[in-house]
Amino acid sequence: MQKITLPPHFSFEECLTFLGRSDREVLHTVEDNRLIRPWRDENRTALLEIGLHSEDFESSKSLSVRDLLSGEALPIPALDWVKEIFDLDRDIEPFYRLLGLDPAIAPLLDRYHGLRLIRIPNLFETLSWTIIGQQINLGFAYSMKARLVEAVGDSVQWKGKHHHFFPRPEQVLTLKEADLKDMQYSRQKIDYLLTLAETMASGKLHKQELMNLEKYSAQHKRLLKLRGIGPWSADYTLMKCLGVPSALPISDAGLHNALRYIHQMEAKPDQNQIKLWAENWQGWQGYVTFFLWRSLIDN
DNA sequence: GCCCAGGTGTCTG
DNA sequence: CAGACACATGGG
Image (cartoon, rainbow, N blue to C red):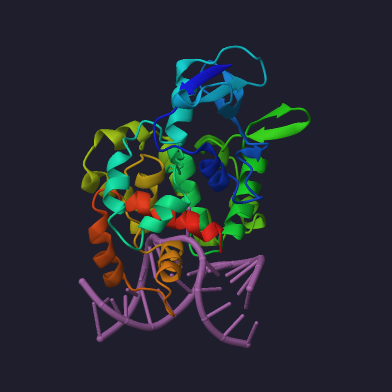
């Protein structure tokens, strides 16, 4: 078992609540205060069990990570991947300082204190998820994702249960249009998804290449060139995959509803109203969005 | 039956 | 550039 030291303002329980929000999720399992999720690179496949390390004194809390398959020590990249998922390297202090001043948002900081932006390190997975989730309810989106994952994704077995990886682009490309149609994908989404898979399989788009662009505007512009990726998907991807804390998916239906609830409004706020509020969120728009998404679980 | 869902591309004025 | 519309289907 290995340990990851935890920064201030981190709550594993809060993060697990978000990770466990859908019972149709097939890419990880939340049970008994632990996250179970498969990981792999070119050299190694492991089934990670991530939990809170309990024997520590309060002053030095840590996460425990171990491989259920082999029990052998995990390589650095696996631990870095866990840190990425929980956004552990973020200096979150400025977020709490700034949003503590916003009367509408401040209550969420208390309620969900320690929640981090839960990230999706895999770019193909993130973009595919935005395509799947467009204009349908989340439950249906999770079902559609599950069908795709179970059809062509790799998995590891442990105690009789399959733990899935999101498919690689090449694996998605083995599917015919009719296969996806059977999984209830619309013609439009089939087009978007297969085009994306082709783009990434042929090496025309890499996460590293996107990260190298550095500037938000350049990254956003690059993503918009992809078929089926509009402003919402681009911002969602920058936020969830690259961890850009200021990315704001302003047209997001969930964001609108969460804002409607916390402001006790009859109708959803319009975009100008949101822009006005978001002026108080400078640099942390994506983090605020994530806390607002979290608030939807309670409704 | 109607409206809304973690939207986007296309077409039109 | 703004606005209408198709896309597909499940849930309230």
